[in-house]
Length: 145
Ligand code: CA2
Image (tube, rainbow, N blue to C red; front, side, top):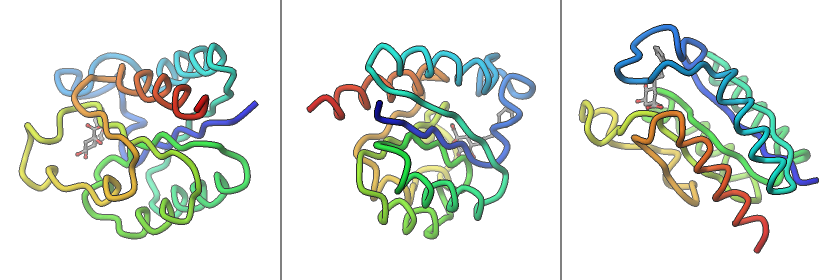
């Protein structure tokens, strides 16, 4: 079965523990479980990972070149700074969907630009953690084509 890797950047390990007014009450484990069960309905498998380290995320993107059909990524604040993550994603063949829990366009101007969007096949922002499930649904549709 095609595999989807779901990558999360810095501070997203705090999901459900801090700033619920922005990021909600669900934890990353909750998100992983829901995505996994949704993946199964599309004949996919998924795993969700989080790191506070840019290089680790880049290594996982490189791994995905061998073991994943698609990438769902919320790079956290690295979205707005990391050309290195963009370069790694550019070396991946397959759909890339970018997710942001909050609506980055409604927030500070430094969050309005995303390097990752230059590679992403789609971007979801402001749907809370439901955005990950929407991305998984879209991934199912893209890979069925
Ligand atoms: O809205 C998003 O998903 C973001 O990628 C989240 C990043 C932020 O820097 C981006 O601009 C937008 C921050 C992730 C921090 O996550 C936390 C979650 C709960 C509590 C504290 C931080």
